[in-house]
Length: 371
Ligand SMILES: *Cc1c(COP(=O)(O)O)cnc(C)c1O
Image (cartoon, rainbow, N blue to C red; front, side, top):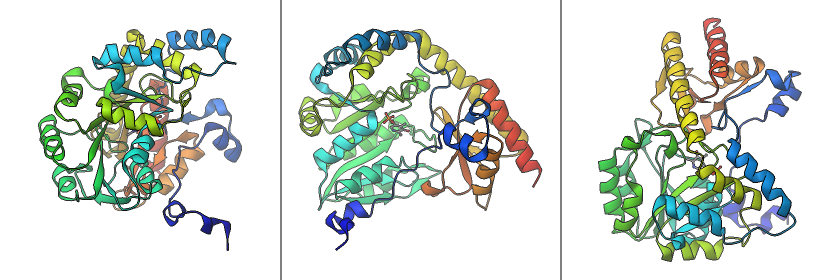
């Protein structure tokens, strides 16, 4: 018997998550200087970390020999005040991916199922499958979630419905009225609904869903957010869920006692107060998005309108974007292929600094013009 047979069949069947290519790896492979490589592949904040968060990490270093606060009291208090929810409604995670996994562990098991959309964030099928549950994929509408199609696929054994708003890698945003109606219908099922708002800080406040108010209306709703994107703390790993206390209690039962480290707790608490950094981040993203869409228009490329800090561009209509991805790598530009999201014609590009965006557009122009 091989060792792999000792593992449940549903674990063996998991296709590994494909992360963006690290700069150091490309430098090694292509013999390039790391400083000459532009990475627009993982939706990271091109401004780096904010000064307040950085100072908080320096200060927290003094106590690094001690275990972190397993309850994350300071960060949870700051979040509860900011979101106007109870302390017992916040669950912290080692990145919001950890929170997604907690939801899967708390609500899914063999014999249950979870519903997600085609082209939706890859962690939903992964977390579903790791829990031994059946993944039910609903077809998409214009690359976004088709809420009616998702609702139609909810079964009596469905315990989780995953919704990303905006979605990664498509950037698609749901209409608030349609989302509210779907949540109302889903509140009458035996499933919890995860509304993943990893990119909410990039949206104009007027466009955002009133999701925190919906928590009062829909007891089965779980909001998830992260410090990895707009707050610039992807390497520290910290995210959270806001939900009903009963749900938080379940998530905390399957959570490791010290899942968020002390530097991450300190940095996130400080970052939450850094309105200036968040503001600068949003403006840079708005400008960069305009730069890319103008550039794409100039190159005659279609793209999917995005509410996030990235955009999916159709570089190979009717074909395969792989060769364009490879050609970009040879020019020192790392973007993200999304064939694994059933979008083989597209590449996902994260919004960077103006000069990085320009490098990416110029490289695209050379590659596509030369065909
Ligand atoms: C990036 C992302 C996350 C957050 O990941 P972290 O684990 O918090 O770094 C969650 N959901 C979506 C849709 C994302 O794109």
